[in-house]
Amino acid sequence: MSKSVTLYIKDNRELRIAKNFLIISILLYVLYILIAVFSLSQLNSSFSYLSVFLWVMKILCFSSNVAGFYKLSKLGRSSVLFKNYMFSVIGMVAFTIIIYLMFKIFFGVWVFDIQKSQLEMALTDPVLSWIFLFAGIFYFGLNVYWSYKICFELTFLSGDIFFINGFKIIISSVSVALLANIMFFVSENQISSFLFLLSMIGMLVGSLILASGFFRLKQITYVVSE
Image (cartoon, rainbow, N blue to C red; front, side, top):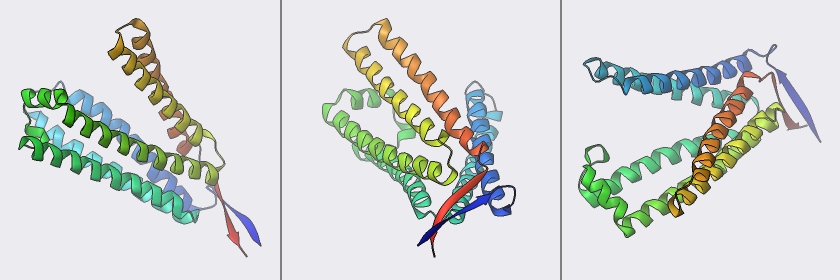
């Protein structure tokens, strides 16, 4: 026989800590994006300091995000949540390393040192294009699956549909963006530009809805066997 256990954030200190970690990671990420955009226009000596600061922010953002998901998974007794979260993190790291190694293998230089002519050659080479395309599609598919599992589990634990709805909006917007790009390459027209703009707005809205789920978190419910 099983029963449901509900933890309320107002009564559970550990749940409040988990929520705070996740909110802090979101705020740090937003701040990181804003500073990164600002730093693009900075070509003076302060650029190196900004780079170091951005790296520190990324580390803090990642650390607080991992801590938040770990605590939330532990409190909700959901190994699925943390497992898929870690899969997404490991997948991102592995994919990045593979891309760097591919550039080193095919061009003899790291991606940071690649010349414009070498990049153009990679884009025009059909073999390399297909390799990068399949690698990207494979990683994208895995990332969609992991993200779905994470958002579904967050919705299940919290009872808040903002998580899964935000995910659905983001995926739908990404699909529209892909369609817009295909239309653009087939025939440049205003419809493709409009669809791409619409997809960008959709991704922003979906991300805001998804992120707001963490701010709205008031309780989690899980099932235990007696």
